[in-house]
Length: 217
Image 1 (cartoon, rainbow, N blue to C red):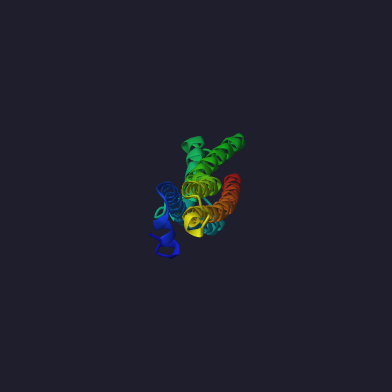
Image 2: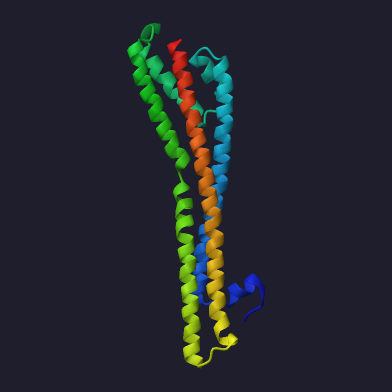
């Protein structure tokens, strides 16, 4: 029985349309959860980046940089400093001077660490892209099914009155609307996250250059 409004349309929909809406609701909830998680992660990483660049301008050694991060070790910039520090100390036996030929190896370690951090930061973004690409088609499936249901009712009852056609058309419209409402935020969130990711990776590259400068000093 139709009760009016969005909830009324959902209540009046058939089992296939309801299954489509449940799937879209699942995609939407997961997408919004990932968006919130990535927003917090990117903000925290950006803040740690600000902290790193403030510290590196005042630091003249790795030990001083490490000491700044002792109370906040779970971030990309700390792991970059730590990887560099371990590589440098492993090549400075008995406090010997670091040889110039060690610089390329240290640069490679920094590149590897940045690549690993990139993988961590990109995690779960593929779900947003999947939602953005598939949600409209899932909604379209519900749309096609609703139209098919309308034609079936016309064939069974032999009339094209609004009372016969309306239920199937309502299923089609609600499936289309929910599909777009799921996909559009996912597209916006995915593009936003990609922009933030590129900015953070650029800052990690700059951080690696700062570390190399400290080594060369």
